Image (cartoon, rainbow, N blue to C red):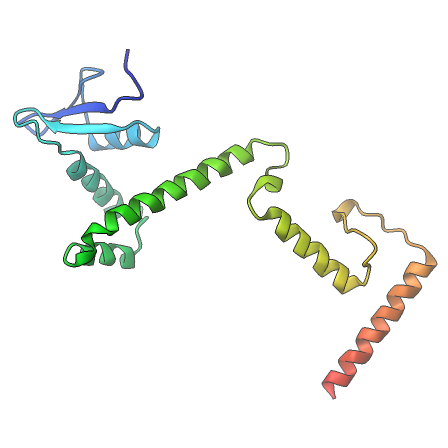
Length: 182
């Protein structure tokens, strides 16, 4: 049985065919991309020399996807990558990219976890702050500092005092607008 924690070993024969050692069959670059998409680590080695060819084949997979119009990397990022090969930044770039993708994977995992809850938006980082800003905005615009807006289900009935208060606020706002306009 295959161990999903160990990298899947792919051997490249002299004919350039790629051989999956777990399933004992030949695979394509698209198959390898599929293994990676489902979270499997892959290691590709040359059968004769034992050289690790993983990086070369992963770059080839990226290049094929980019050439098919499945662009993920913007031109400026590709340009910066090429530039990094000719500058002193080569020692910093791999570490930066690795950390950036690690942060991306972590946030993506947290987002997926949060999507499984009953109200997924309430667990999105920063949602409470956005919700509080929206409520403050609505309160400021309507002048209902003592009330909470609760969405479409909110009561539409109000007391005559509420209506009078709203009319007064509206008149005061109109007066301020008139002063500003002329």
